[in-house]
Image 1 (tube, rainbow, N blue to C red):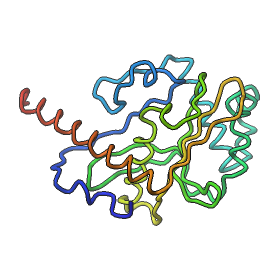
Image 2 (cartoon, one colour; image 1 turned 45 degrees about the vertical axis):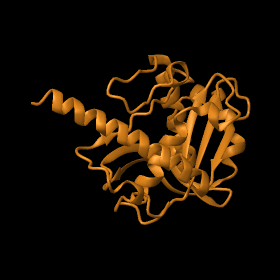
Image 3 (tube, rainbow, N blue to C red; image 1 turned 135 degrees about the vertical axis):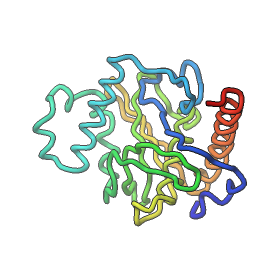
Length: 217
């Protein structure tokens, strides 16, 4: 996926599309299976949002500065979600980015990715997800792989990053503390999902174009 934009140069892009895949507990995407880049988005409940937010805060502290852990609530640090990913953290090293904005300058979309680091020696975009239901297969994660490859493609076309990424990793953490499921996406699998992402992006931009034509300002 070095030349991530090549398959889509024929698409005329206008404006900037913001990636808004929700961080939810199996919630909106699982129930409705709707694209999370849609204009009208389904919001997770306040409790679910806060659980996901605190989980990400702990992970960011663990991967960047353990000193930050002292500032976090002990209950948050010892949550089931954090317990769930302990075995995964052992395989993560060489962190390059955390909670970092990324922008695909050619395809005109942007988002906020969780992490870029090495997983078992492979540099990956890592996306942390929370769930109350088991997701042992990548197909159970619905649109999450599209989100990951969207970030991979954006990193490789964002001048703010001096490295390229070819792989992805989805980590599904569980509230009850059971071991998280990991879904590694090698370069071949990322390429397959990248094609699907381009189709999703094309449909989205075409829809936006039609709405603009029908309702000119």
